[in-house]
Image (cartoon, rainbow, N blue to C red):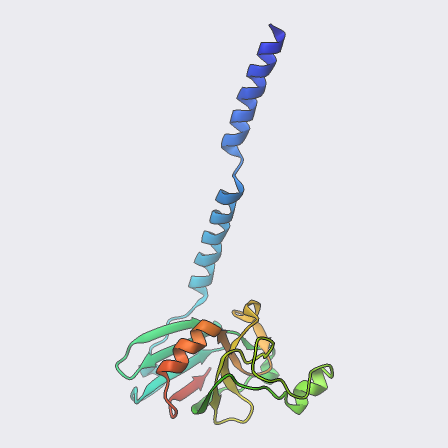
Length: 188
């Protein structure tokens, strides 16, 4: 008789514990929902008219503070992309520029200041999975400043670049396809 009470008591306590203890799946869903809510609210929606007189062939605003790239097509279609931004204010260039060149499969040559900060960097890196410029790059009219992809997705949403604006490879591929040379860009 004491054996059956022990089993019933154990079963009841076990059932109660199961009801109040979140399962790994539920815990993960809850934390993802919180993360997504926080992440989405950190972006500031921008309006192209606040920065440009017209849309021309399209416009881009790179918001360093909210770590987002805002793109408007010539017809006003708006897309927001999360981005990586320069590590420090010293590496950040702000102001108006434009897209002067586009490259699928960019190669990478670190600048002298990058090599000075990190002497272990290679002198040159061909296109491919290890290349920090990802799969596509759009060059600005400022030397050594680009909007490019990255194979290291941990960098997106962080201060992690040496001056460039980085996007997920799938996002830069999409943006690359709808951005023309001559597109005006503002980094603020």
